[in-house]
Image 1 (cartoon, chains in turn red, purple):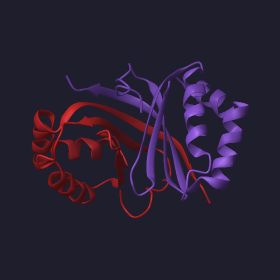
Image 2: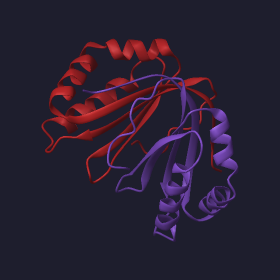
Image 3: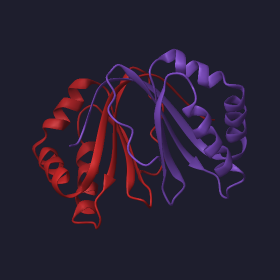
Length: 109
Length: 109
């Protein structure tokens, strides 16, 4: 996760919620995850992302985008598609994706 | 987080994404968080929740509900409202809430 929380943007915008259980061992995951984070940040419509993994291997990553088109473009990015395919085979015991339109948001302070 | 990931339900349904940075020390947080998890699971329209906190104190919790009315009812639950008020004062340096309507979802395997 970056230095601060992703702020409450002005709705509507989109959240892609990715929950997962990792396999044992790194197997190149850390390097690719960092690379994907940097690449995602360069995509049009990208608003930010947050990722936390607990000691039991369960993780939640949420990426925020301005619209569906931006999500689709990132999904089709060649390097990202290859990373996802590799992840399905090697990094994840199980994962679930929920794509959701943010209708309201607010922050502390 | 419970034994398995919250599955991809049939859309539409709602996700309440709560991201936060904790203050130092437990200060009663663990006990209340566990109690709120049990209470939430008893609410009408509750579909599941997942919560992960990293070693740096940053956390992501996602609670899934069938509809807006269920979110509103849980938000107004007396004990939950009291816990949130206490949390704002004592447990969180910072938090952000994004309430989002899930439009599609899918799972591995």
